[in-house]
Image 1 (tube, rainbow, N blue to C red):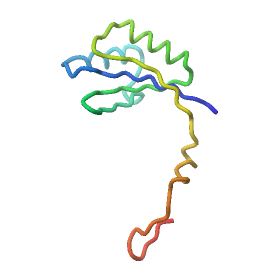
Image 2 (spheres, rainbow, N blue to C red):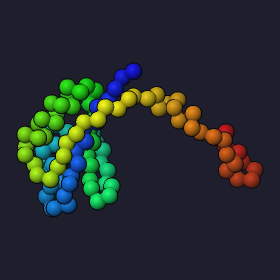
Image 3 (spheres, one colour):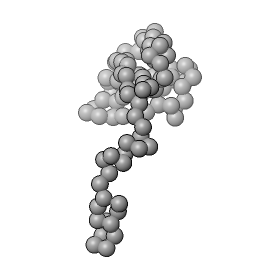
Image 4 (cartoon, rainbow, N blue to C red):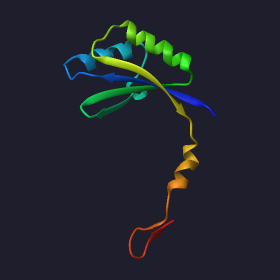
Length: 104
């Protein structure tokens, strides 16, 4: 089964400018904003990029760390690729939408 590698950049500070500097760095490295997934959770912000190989993810991680941006952590997580076109069906259960319409 194929794997995807998620490069996660955690922004550990809400200081002004950290996000903007990081965005400019990513842009200068050829990343477009539609390639970045953003998440804000528990007062922290995370940016994720996805790669087909661990080598690509590690190479990109080194480029980010070389910029010496304060208040960020960079990590890589291996994701197992799932067949999402069929996997959702396993969790789906028929239900009554209204008293006369059943979704199956």
